[in-house]
Image 1 (tube, rainbow, N blue to C red):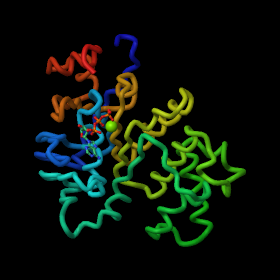
Image 2: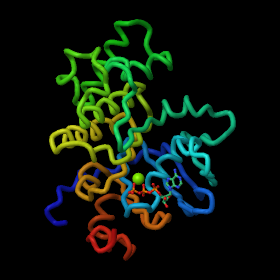
Image 3: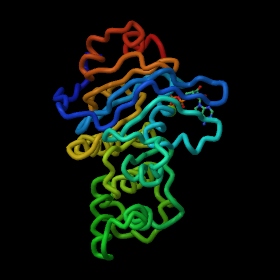
Length: 265
Ligand SMILES: Nc1ncnc2c1ncn2[C@@H]1O[C@H](COP(=O)(O)OP(=O)(O)OP(=O)(O)O)[C@@H](O)[C@H]1O
Ligand SMILES: [Mg+2]
C-alpha cells in the first residue's frame, strides 16, 4: 500500500448533505444491511469499500430510493437529504433521483441517440428554456464526462452503439446533466480502460466542488485517490467510517485492516 498515491486530505468542514441513521435492509428473510449510520458530507467524495456481498450497492440504492423498485426489499431507519426524510410519503422518488443521481456498474444507455440520452433528464425536469440551452447542457455534460471529443460529430447516432467504456461515460454525462446535488456511482470504472478511468477520476474530483459524490469501488488505490472519506462495509455492517487517510494508514478495526491489506475479501 505504500506506493499508493493518496488523495489530498482536505476534509470538508461543511455540514452533512445526507444523514443515515439505523438503516436496515431486508430482502425477504435476508438481513442485508444492519444498523448503518453514516453522514455524507457536502463537497466531499465518500468511498464505500468492502468484500463482495457486504451491502455496498444495497446501501447506495437506499440513498435515492432505488430499492423501492426491488419487490422483496424492505428499508428501515431514517435517511435525510438536507434534513428532510427522503422516505416521507410527500417525497416524489423521481424528483429525488434528479437530486440524487446514480451511475450503475453496467452501462445502461437508453435506446436513443447520444444527444437524447443526455437531453432526457433536463427535458423531463424542465431545466432548460430552449433548444440552444439544451444543446449547451448536452455539450457541457459530455465534456465533463470526457466523451465530447469522441462523439461530437455523431450526436444522432444510437447511444447503444458506443463501446462499453464510452457507454459508461455517456451514462455519467446523463447523470450530471440534471446537476444532481449528490451523485452515487456504483463501481463506475469497472468497464473502463485506464485512460477513461483517469478521466472519470478527474471528473469526480471536479464534481465535488459542487456536489457530494459517493463511489463504490473494489480498488483500494482508487478509493485512496479520489475520496476524502471512506466507509468499510463487512457482512452488512458498516464497520468503520472516517477520513480516508486514517482508514488506509491507521484503521481502528482489525477487520478493516485485514481487508485493506488483502487478507479478507
Ligand atoms: N435485488 C436483490 N434481491 C435480493 N437480494 C439482494 C438483491 N441485491 C442484493 N441482494 C443481497 O444483499 C446482500 C448485499 O448485496 P449487495 O449487492 O448490496 O453487495 P455489494 O457489497 O454491492 O457486493 P458487490 O461488491 O459484489 O457488488 C447480498 O446477500 C445479496 O445477495
Ligand atoms: Mg455491488
